[in-house]
Image (cartoon, rainbow, N blue to C red; front, side, top):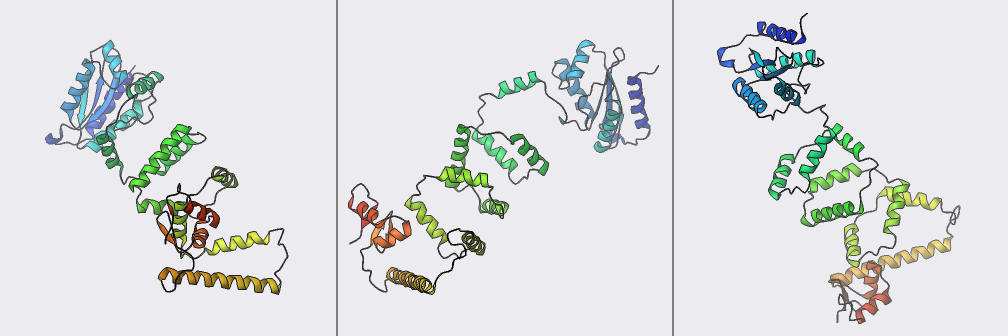
Length: 349
């Protein structure tokens, strides 16, 4: 009865009959390393015959072959022979190798581990001992800045495939980062912002990705809880004010506020009286006039009544002006100006 090894060698010979090759292309081969005594065989292909065969033999002799099945079979019985066919190009060689592997991979005497050609680690599972050895080898390993820069340069501009992103998402789903990890991430992000590493294009992509998305009620509650009791510094307030200065309100935000007020149980179904409307109109006019006057004072057209103040190196035309902009009580500002502990609060004479 014909063995599987003999069938594999016969299949290789059949490919030889259908292949045409020049003498210059004799280094491109498909081969089978086989042992007649044990019945084991290994299927391979190479674009450099001499180098590949020498590599196989060198690794086997030094007990370092990457294919553990081939190495164990060689250690038990070293009487392996080689049969090969020449083909015209590498693509054809790997195609023939793939066909032979697909046909004989389920045979117990076939020594191939990888099921794809050219060989890859796809589908190969590491043993627990192997995983432990890799973990131990990488423990306390220090990666130099030069290596980090090389890796970053190599990955720069590459986009992860959607399936990879989805796998990563599923792997991290339900996992909670420790407080130490969160602190590290926070510090890293802060460093990136301070160093200006985040590109404008990246900011725009993040903005576009989140555009139109709304937080769930649970997320809103978490944000509210985390921000409760936090004091926004005067510097941060000034930054926010300058950011929104001159920007018109979003029509959607205006409509949302209107809808919110419609459902207010205290004002539900109520309308302002003519007297209240007149009062509101007068207040709005005064506010408008006040804003215009302050603009004129800033431009130096008219002189301010109150004394100007300097808070955090920002000049305000008066205490009331600083109070309105910073959201701090006038009495508090006045007390801080008099208090020597607040060096950043000064009155300009």
